[in-house]
Length: 234
Image (cartoon, rainbow, N blue to C red):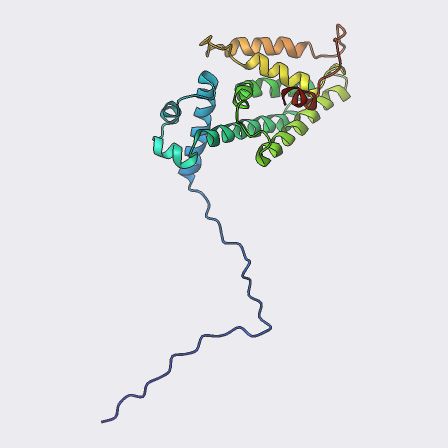
């Protein structure tokens, strides 16, 4: 009786010397699911509001509750408080930068664009960033430096456009605008006055009208730049 002849397994093709192997090709990073992206934004939005009310020590349970997610979901996105605060600051800065960039394209003149930006930045709670930047917050993190540079350039372009066309007084700097915006849009400590947006926008408009050209008075000192503010807070 004949036995079947064993067949050797087929050899795998071996690349020749002329075939290059792309061993350094980056692995494909999977895109986050849509629900994960939505949850992340809801957490950041809720965290922004809760941090305005309670400061950097805000209860994380309250942030999760307002975002409509469980604590496990919050910690999956942001494993600790410093990480959450870091990303809230980036979230606000990126949104405020977009407001500055879009203003000139969407408004009829540079003063209207400045008004749109200033009121929009107040709604984004930019005034609440200052308390978050205290303590052990890493101000020199590369992501923060990049976001800060983008924000500075966008606001400088906006303010410069208004001054170049004679709609804004020339004796103000970006630092003047940003520190006034921060002070006027931040709730008073311990006031529990969180429904005061109408007063915020009223006082911001009074401030903005004072930026119109021609100037009605002479300002003391020199225009304040953002670099001046950084030197004073370091």
